[in-house]
Each structure stands twice: as C-alpha cells, then as structure tokens.
Image 1 (spheres, rainbow, N blue to C red):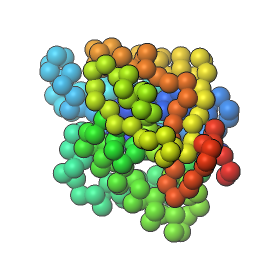
Image 2 (cartoon, helix red, strand yellow; image 1 turned 180 degrees about the horizontal axis):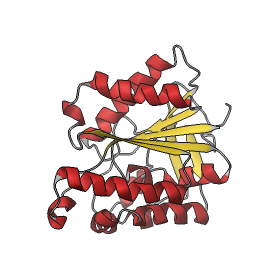
Image 3 (tube, rainbow, N blue to C red; image 1 turned 180 degrees about the vertical axis):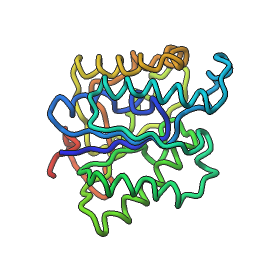
Image 4 (cartoon, one colour; image 1 turned 30 degrees about the vertical axis):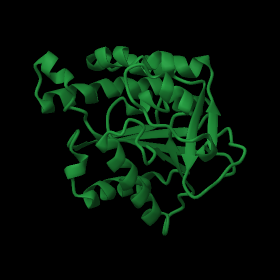
Length: 233
C-alpha cells in the first residue's frame, strides 16, 4: 500500500513518525514525503552566515540523504515561506497538497494533529490545509484514510526543553510498534540534518523516540487501538 506524509519543514518527519516510515518501508509499503517549505528561516542560518534562501538550499540538500536513509519512494519539497504559512493564501497551499493527492492516490495520508504537537503556527496551518484538501479530494478520489501523528502524555511530559501537546489516550486510534532497527533508521535520518545538529541534540529527541507510535484517525474509531496505519483497508 501507499502512504503520503505531509509536513511543513525538513526534519518534521524524523522528529515525528520516522520510525514508522522505516517500518512501513521494511514491510514493502510505498512511502512518500511532501514538505511544504525548505526550512530556511531556522535561526541556525545566523550561526552559518547564510540567508534564508541559502539555508533552504542546504536543508533541501540534506533531505536528499534523508530520502536515501528511509528508502522513500518519492519526496517533494515545495518552497512556501518557512515560518510564514499563516500568511499564505490557504487556497494555494491546498492546491499544492491536492496535486500530490491526485498524483499518488495514497491509501493513508499522515500529517500533524490539530494541536500541532509543538503548537507552532506552521504545524497548525498544515493540519488545517491537509484536512481540507483531503476532504475535498476524497469526494472524487479513492482516499480512504487521513491520520494525524501525535504523541502520548508520557512522551510530552518527558520532553526536557520543549512544551509539547499530547492527544488523550481515548482519542488515539492506532499505535504502531517499532523495533530497534526502525528507531536506528530514524536516528540516522536525524543525523543527516548536519546544520540542525545543535537543535536536535538540545531537544533530546533521539532518546525520546517511542517504541510505540500513536496516531489519531479522522472520521474513524478503533477501540482498542489498531497496530497498523493500514489496518482494515
């Protein structure tokens, strides 16, 4: 089956469900990634003496290694303004997402939940845009499932430096178990972001990656939670 992960920035996939992406590839599924910005507005550009455009080019280059590490079937990096999605015409964002949905026809689309985990406005806009585009596209296309990668209360409370929002246990529909190899792949992908290494280290994310990754489903309910994003499809 085919999954399309949609996030606003480079590294969002590896701070999030990267281990699940690795597991899905190992199981033979086709995994694609759509990134809405090149991530050039990061403060790390000041340390490196780079402009937003130059930093975006460097981070996009780093993502080529991420594609290789995960063995993704495809990756598309768009050039909407990093840290500026709230100022974009949402119709343009929706059109870009819809184009990918039409091209790939994924069984599962994954993005951020309504709280965006970190609460960053680019995350919140991405949630709203993807949900709207998916709902409109599924009226004419076979798009059976929309999922939101989230974190548990335990993971949110374990974060030493960042305030994270979590999804209550009763709203989690899928919990995907991942093994040591999957987690190691995710850590290798994080290592590809050389220019972001300081933030990755400070976040402690490598030690926080859970071996059970939770997701919400839109318009569906699994109780108890399913163990696979493709369950029942």
